[in-house]
Length: 178
Ligand SMILES: Nc1ncnc2c1ncn2[C@@H]1O[C@H](COP(=O)(O)OP(=O)(O)O)[C@@H](O)[C@H]1O
Image (cartoon, helix red, strand yellow):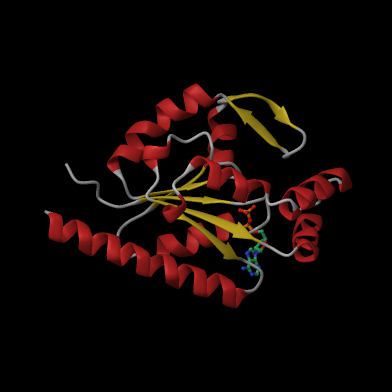
């Protein structure tokens, strides 16, 4: 059976705009998409082992997470929104979007979240060192990994428009294969 929609991984350092992009994409996509904020999901369901101080998030029970995600991903039409992406099997993703943000702006966004100074510094350093981008490049074929700037509202709108266009192409290709 052909999946109803693509599987899009949106990743990036906390504060780069993953959830904002995912929500807008759900509204504008030509095929129905389900947004899974993986960090929130893990927290709600209690599928974690410990609190990860560095990332201010819960360290997921990865086996449990992958088991639960597998049927959802198989059905298609899903956005996986998380600050890490190497956990997901390579075969899952049709597109991997890595959001990037200037460190001064990112600092301000994280400050607004009332993160502790050390956490802001760590996340900022990770962004400067492009940790998430390197991880995505090491985990997926280069042709499906897209790095997008997420600094302004114009960036947000342009990025979403670009991904919507990509989804439309995906949809047409599937329709012609059927
Ligand atoms: N491209 C952008 N332009 C302006 N503000 C943005 C942009 N992307 C994100 N933001 C703002 O930054 C903050 C963090 O965004 P969020 O989507 O929660 O990040 P993440 O899900 O990556 O942690 C929010 O206040 C959001 O409105």
